[in-house]
Image 1 (tube, rainbow, N blue to C red):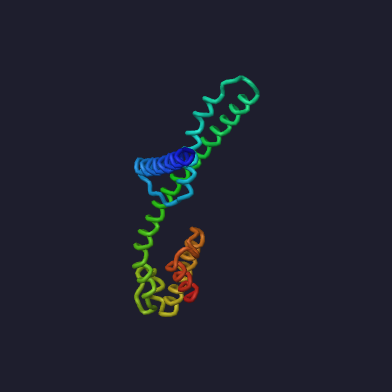
Image 2 (cartoon, one colour):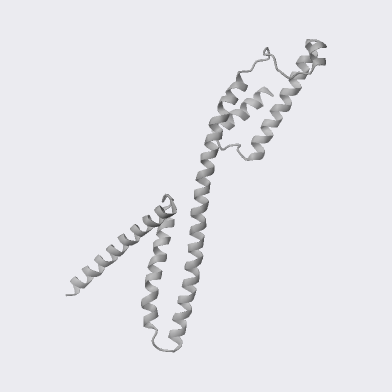
Length: 186
């Protein structure tokens, strides 16, 4: 008899855990999210178990003694902490979704900038640069080269500043290659 009760309790726990896992999947589908963080789902299941235990504890509070008030205080504290964890997990899921979107944007921007970077690398000193003021073109080859060197130096400094200020230094191999190229050519 005792082993049958134990088997039934074990079966009940297993079925309840499966139910919670299915409810988690349903929650994620409704929110349009993907479960990447298993610990977040475990915390969610613990919250659900905690809420399931609250009802039997409330039924157990039949007397008006100290035990009853202590149990009520513990339940209130548990409820408050559960609410905090739920809010925290919702915020975490929102931030993970936003991070995923921003990574996708970053990848698209990186794909768009690669051809430009390759073109910049392929430029040679012999190519004619559009936009040189008239007075430098007419005044001879020496001042044209000087103007180009100054322009290139300003562009190098600007590119390095943009990369460093935006925080992309060390985040991507392509960006690091640009910095290395700019350092060598400067």
